Image 1 (cartoon, rainbow, N blue to C red):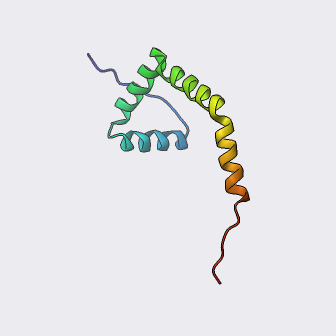
Image 2: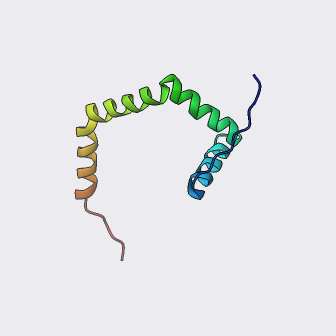
Image 3: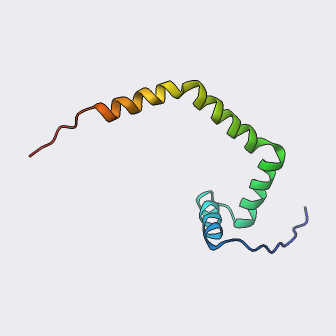
Length: 79
């Protein structure tokens, strides 16, 4: 497929995050942008967010119990 160059103005912090995430994934910024657009337009991102929300809703009590246990467990201190 032919490539098209785009120019876009974004906040500096957005540009830095995009560069870092692309590097973390071993992608160029252009390939990272392509991936984001494809995931967004295919509905993959939306389905993933919905699945995560369902998971959290179904298991929230487990997370709450673990957090409560962590907050109430006395910490042993060494002098």
